[in-house]
Image 1 (spheres, rainbow, N blue to C red):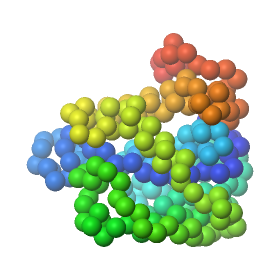
Image 2: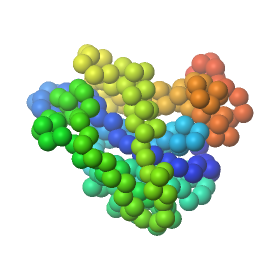
Image 3: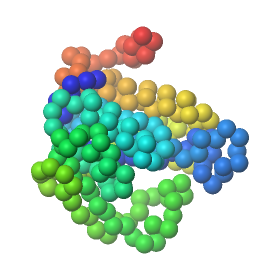
Image 4: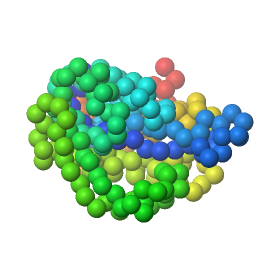
Length: 220
């Protein structure tokens, strides 16, 4: 998907693991903790870009470059306060973006737990909207839509469901499962509030794909 006319894009990351969690590095062939970066258009609910990898500078920059390359206009971008984001946004968008961050302050007791052991959301005690670059509308600096998508992803992709034995054993299998999930979400699944698929709402497709259509395109 290229030349997308998105206006307000929200970005977040979702934690998972492949083979074993970080605390079990001795397991043969284990990739360990894995991060799926997700971009979502707030209006059409389309997911224009995602990437699977480590939660590090390299994958953050690769994700932002991929996202910027799919957009046809200057957008308002919202992210959390992850340290690598400002540099990655600058590298990917080259200053042509209205960028704001949601800065959340969490309960100290929850911050002592890692993502791998925290199965309920940490208590948020304060939220700040912060302008990082350009001229974003402060009222539109939000991540509520993409955070809802994270919940949807965990419910529909078993490899990301908490407290199960359905996790992937290989990176390629995890990436393929996430890719198939997003393809189905964008092209096959009718969004309740839109009454059409995100791809239709974004003008990428004129009709809703069937599962047969999805399988045919996957094989091309």
